[in-house]
Amino acid sequence: MTDDLLPALKRHFGFDSFRPGQEAVVRDALSGRDLLAIMPTGGGKSLCFQLPALLKEGVMVVVSPLIALMQDQVRLLEDNGIAATFLNSTLGGIEAAQRIQALRRGEIKLLYLAPERLLSPGFVDSFLQPLQETVGISAFTIDEAHCVSEWGHDFRPEYRQLSRLREWFPDVPVLAFTATATQRVREDIARQLALNDPALHLASFNRPNLYYAVKPRGGRAFDELLGHIRYHNKGSGIVYCLSRKRVDEIAADLQAAGVSALPYHAGLSGDTRRENQDRYIRDDVQVMVATVAFGMGINKPDVRWVVHYDLPKTMEGYYQEAGRAGRDGEPASCVLYFGMGDIRTAEFLIAQKVHPQTGDPLEDEQRIARQQLRQVLDYADSSECRRAVQLRYFGEPHPGGCGNCDNCLNPRPLQDWTLEAKQMLSAVARLAQRRQRYGASTVIDILRGAKTEKLISSGLDTLTVYGIGAGRSQEDWRALVRSLMQQGLMEETHDGYPVLLLNAASWEVLRGERAVRMAAPAAAPKASGKGRAARAAVAAGVEPDSEEDALFDALRALRKKIATEHGVPPYVVFNDASLRAMARQKPTDQDAFAAIPGVGAKKLDEYGWDFTALIREHAKA
Ligand code: ADP
Ligand code: MG
Image (cartoon, rainbow, N blue to C red; front, side, top):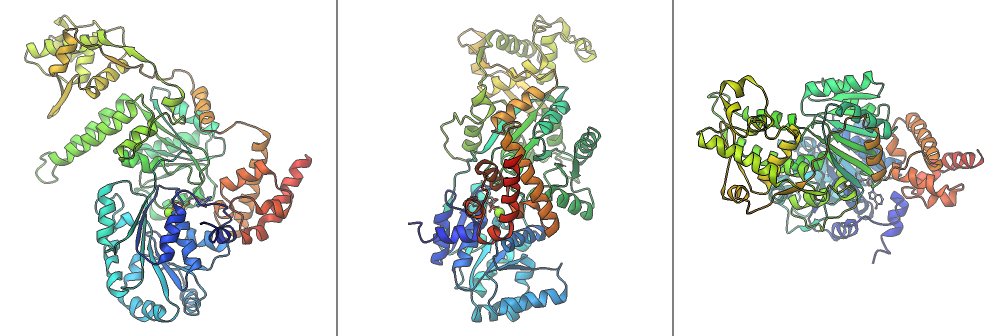
């Protein structure tokens, strides 16, 4: 049934086939009904409204939250020879007037607008209404529709007003698109936008091209990060950190180590942020070190890796941030570094959530934040398939064994930790006998026989369990604590600060009725991280230094040169997926070049000659 749409897909966008879910959305959009499409980042949402816009009468109005995002999309469309434009405050009067004329003449198929502009009454009465009566408006598309929800992480009050579109234009369909993974936000979108019996499209949130790994953060984490970056050679990446201070430090350290890196966080001036983002998007800089403030605004499809250098606050946050990698569908890697200090930092930050006036703890917020932290820790600690854990969190079943995560590629064997578990639980029991309650770090200090002032002055060094676990590292004991809690064999409560408690299951272990097994704790690396980084990269499908890679690099240089000449980001010329296909298939004439994914009529004409010339050249060398 795709026959009628495929030629248009190839001609306008250069693609031979739809990605999963795209065709059904396109068909519903063409039928003129409202719809809500939920697809992960990189799922290819843009095409789902852009293709219908081209095939329908009139102009489609697209609402997008950020000016930068809007400009990029319009440039991408123009580069495919599609009549698209935007109106916003950056345009001069003459330029804006010309665009409005073109719209009135019906020459434009897609009009991008920020919500403030769309909703300003003068604009609706004197421009959009007349446009609807003459040229016709084929649909309103609301991109990044989760911005309408207060429950989402990018709430924009202006988006709230979009429900008025329904009153003003009752007959024009509304198409909403988002990558949000939470049920509550999805329901909120349909309600807030007053969607009329919308067709619901929910794509899988699985991103098979992403490799996931968690690495223990030992003292050499920075070296490992460097190894990772060097391994990925020229591939763009993002390092996410928790605080602005940390972003500045890591960015400076990377620069000092000769890495092309820039910082991005909300503490930088608007100009600096824009400039840094621009340089990143244009491939003038390889690495962006950033807080979570960096993200939604980037459409860059060829981010090859994302590293979380600090523990993310929520699983949803982790999934979305890591998901900025590999939008083009090519292999990309997502690595989370995880150390004991992270847990203490996270707990400290949670304890800071207090009422600004009274200083009383905000108990609900703290409880939710702790629960979210627990989920992130469970993910980080898990010896199960990473993909299965993530997808389960979003309510999507996955059989596991994805073959593209650290746990699937290097399974950690289960070990018997019954002896250590008994030691730990009996330490907690002994303390309880003395009517004392402590958190994990003190109990671990006791087991390891630490000679701290606190232990000695409290007489804890006289316990029979003092020092019986000196043979195990602090990290090992921490892993055991978390594993015992995950398995329900011990509890932790929070009255002021976290304390360990026994439950009925703990006693089963203590009485020897139950064995305790856990996955071997991953050892923090001691040597430079080169080997590991290399393994991760190979796992992510990035083959080092082949002839194909040499051609790929040359193609990339040509792309950069053309992009600079045209004043556009390199991915507007071609994305990595297209360059990879060129490096593999080595098309040397226009016919062969036309078969490359991403090469439509306009790009064939405009770039075919340069790229095939380079490939011929390369074949000779
Ligand atoms: P989203 O908005 O869902 O995050 P985009 O619309 O930005 O995703 O698309 C992500 C990438 O996927 C872009 O580089 C785009 O060119 C590419 N893409 C989209 N649809 C297809 C397709 N049918 N075949 C190949 N690549 C596609
Ligand atoms: Mg998008």
